[in-house]
Length: 66
Image (tube, rainbow, N blue to C red; front, side, top):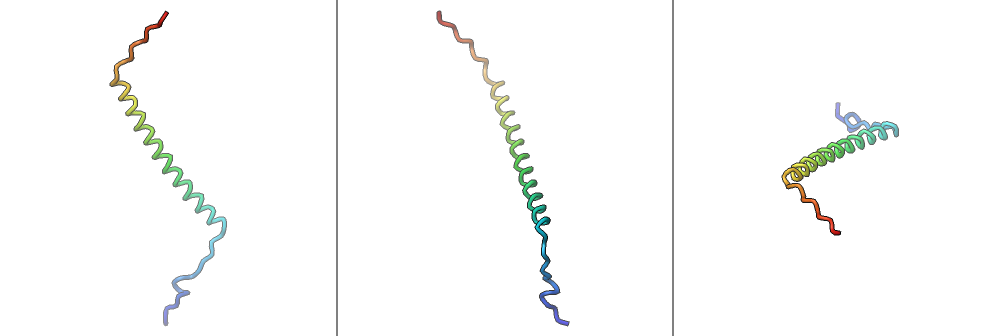
């Protein structure tokens, strides 16, 4: 018996619905990763801003001119 290409590489057709579902799942995964990265960055920047504000002395009130 000789091996033929068709035995190993059977062309299978995928339906449009399965392609759309795969695309949607990949897109949702990418969006979830980007959202998580954005939230992580936001929390980091917020912590740095709060630390900076805590380290700075309170500004003196300005005198009003009459």
